[in-house]
Image 1 (cartoon, protein in one colour):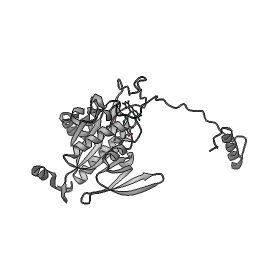
Image 2 (cartoon, helix red, strand yellow):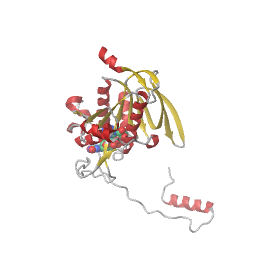
Image 3 (tube, helix red, strand yellow):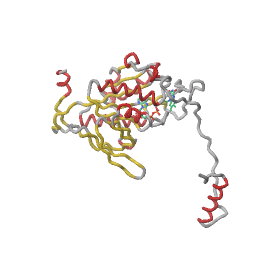
Image 4 (tube, protein in one colour):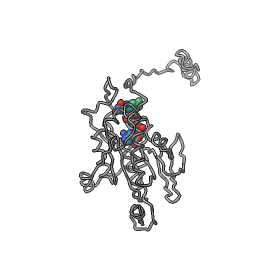
Length: 295
Ligand code: FAD
């Protein structure tokens, strides 16, 4: 215990050498998902699950920004960055990329029992992994992307926050500051036509927008180091989550069908009317005809 406390405290200086005081090392967890590098996602018609064979995979684009923001928190405040991903064994490639960029620890959450999860079951596994990490170190911030480019639900980040009972900050396009002493974070949220500055207690889940930063590129030495870096594999023997709460069994929703909506051909109105009032009348008549105005 004493040894851990000694390791946890350190004097911290910025890259310019300026003394920033004594800090408690705190943990930032970046959640990254491996997604298909295509919009043509195919789904098994029988099981309703994703067909992964023959599809190239990448780190979810929003999560490259979540990772970058986590690394900026590390650079600025000395936090330690752990990256977690739930997915098949191939997701290790995504985690290696995160390590090449500067993440301190990478954990792959992979088990057949986790497969076929909806957002409820996915957030369950991610939350339990974060809880496990937080037993070793004080949790400051969880950074998620706004949404993925395959599932697209934007539910997982808020799901983690509500399970943990921590602050939930979505649509964030800037982290203004982290007040480590008072355990508070101030962020800017991008809403429709305006911004909102919000302060919230730590720990906090922050779901970031793409405009928050420009992700860095890995250096060649970092990339080489990441090749040999250890990636921890946590399966359900390690996690010990009730199997009724994870994977297909823990999923309360099922994909019945996935399809691209048919585009209805547009129609240009107004050829026979010149005045705006006449065109508006024409539009209202047409909408009435199609019963689009009734309550
Ligand atoms: P979002 O909520 O859009 O993601 C937000 C952020 O959460 C991400 O930017 C990232 O930071 C984090 N995050 C999300 N997922 C992960 C992850 N796995 N690891 C780390 N961080 C993550 N998929 C299947 O393969 N098989 C299925 O049977 C299946 N059934 C589904 C049923 C339903 C009804 C739905 C909605 C989805 C289903 N999916 C299935 C997709 C799967 O549930 C989602 O991929 C997963 O729950 C994440 O949701 P999302 O992609 O919408 O993430």
